[in-house]
Image 1 (cartoon, rainbow, N blue to C red):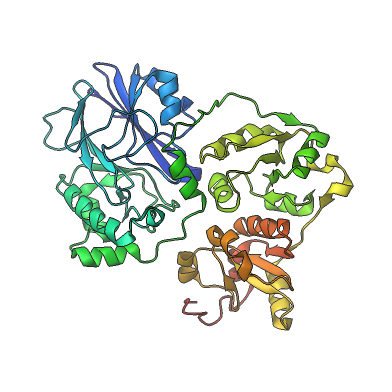
Image 2: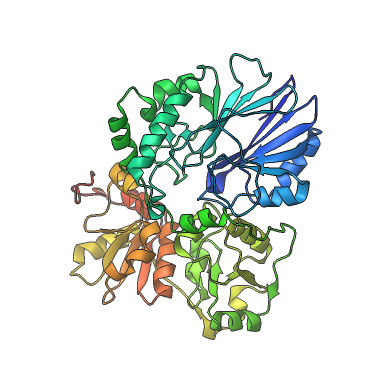
Length: 474
């Protein structure tokens, strides 16, 4: 998206797999530009800036991100750009901090900084005006303070001694300050639907402040206490990698070389790495993985929310070796790098089947009609495990008797799971269940999963969800 005329150049970039929006803002009259909240692989910003005749002179981070590793260091190295956060940010590298109410002039285009703590203490928003004296701003880049249909979650800093209530009270005041912007001001957040940084994000990538004033539940006329109650309730489980990535974003870390090839590993080198403790990550689709895979491999299909799923079930400190489709190794490495998982040793240079039968196994997947028959006869010889989030289960229900463990909580709750009988894992469509079942098998559990997930169950069985389970509606 770019403005058609006038001095302002405004481009929104959207990374579907992380529900992440970033922005290039520039001035045609001077050729000066900033990038806001960049992803770690930064070539597309450089290419777009060149296409518009712009020079990137600053990277602005609206806050210290937890859900992705930002590309501020990469852009600074490639362009010499200064890095700026709100002045409340505590970082391990040099920055040019931005004060509340400070203006940055790119030429005719003006950027106004507003401190908006709540999602994090250092959160800021950036008000963009095409001309400094415009009564109605072009838009506001809201980071994780204000989403389309939601606000940023206030509960991610409990480990740092900041309670959800404390942060929610700050967020209330920050969002009410944003309401002073005119109705026609466009709202451009850092995330859309699917992000774990909120609970009710819209699939829309922008909106007007007026529409948000009327339609965003968190901006309704309410007391501060009521706001605290509504925004702290029902937040999804935060992926385990959030804590790691937020710390990494504070650090002076190595930069990503997007063009570097992924080392190709012979079967012998691959097996040697596995024997030394490397995690085997198979990026093929669940059906191909189920048919044949290496003993102990974890299946995270490269399509969809690959990096986020990896961050939920893998440890960034572990060495990883990739296998699956050889021509996707670079993509897999880059997508892992977007959340700071940099310890990729290499990728298997041959198809999985070529490693040798002694190292291979398979995994059955159960169809919905077969599972229904098994449940009808079940005398406790297996257990259902539903790894969807609480919101999904509230909306659609679950299979009667299923144990509910959201995938982001799986590793922390392994001790709750039975080891004396098999597990059948269920998710929405059969993707996360393959991930979870492979993780469980790698840790010694006997596990399979439901092909097609809960969607297949609802389509195959006349009364799919049964009566409400533990307060979960049908």
